[in-house]
Length: 405
Ligand SMILES: [Zn+2]
Ligand SMILES: [Zn+2]
Image 1 (cartoon, helix red, strand yellow):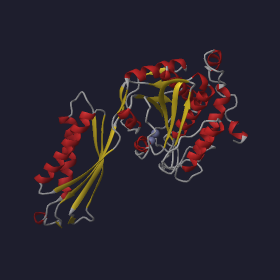
Image 2 (tube, helix red, strand yellow; image 1 turned 45 degrees about the horizontal axis):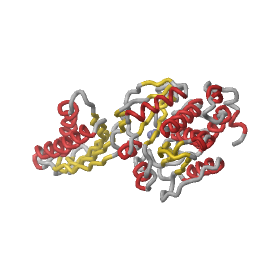
Image 3 (cartoon, helix red, strand yellow; image 1 turned 90 degrees about the horizontal axis):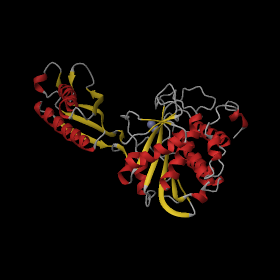
């Protein structure tokens, strides 16, 4: 990296645990201050060259190069993007995984940062550059202490989180085989640097998507009795769908049904043949998820039928609810304390995360990592506080060590 990368960070915020960690005779001395500089440069490089889901080719090469320079070999994979690697200790023990996502978004960056995206219309607006740099830092720390590891740590640099398709492909590729637990994290702008949100149970929502085409019969707008009006049917359906949350779901549980798009007709004096609505359902519980889906299908069919219309429902299931394991979350909390992080109990997020697919196979925990900032995920001015990177690396490293036992 050119030296001017350091201009803005020289002398900035020495990580306060550096001395403590060096004093810890159990580990090799960890020079966190020099590692922090290295990781900030890595993150800035990733930030300048973001790539969309399934197109993370340069990112893949860059991660592989960073690992290769530290002598960490890459695992074979059938995936075109994404990097997987193992760091095994000398003694036998369990195999666990640490995961970061690596893709960016089709958003034009408006941060004004000197190291803003050099790719037009593409931006790391969800902070996956932060996750990637943090996991590389954890990998470097694990590598430095490889001899003392009791078991194996698999690194999952996962592609295509934003499209929701990456985790399932990583699992199908066999990268989770033999792995007993997994830890991951997501940056969180509303949590300050120095704090981490860790919580047992549901943390992020299941993401389902629907598209309903309501088929009617077009007519002259002045002769409605000659047709079956899909605009009126769609309007009734949108209102009726709101009763799923208010009248069917247990008030002590939660769900969202949002119709975000409505389309129908081409002019003011013609009743069209069809109208289409699209939207999303979010839930935190598999039973509620199924209940909302069944009720949705029933309401769509019956409301349409009441108006002599036909509803064609396309239901697209996304990631399941992300549910953190109790025992592993406790281990992550202990690791956070060791990393001198304040542990808070975060509010669940109604956004989705394909890390949830891993948790369908093996237990694990997903953390909301404090990075500060004025803008939420996917905003063109989204930023993270880079002083959080080394903390996240150390948290992941310490979590892995503790999971190995
Ligand atoms: Zn995102
Ligand atoms: Zn994200």
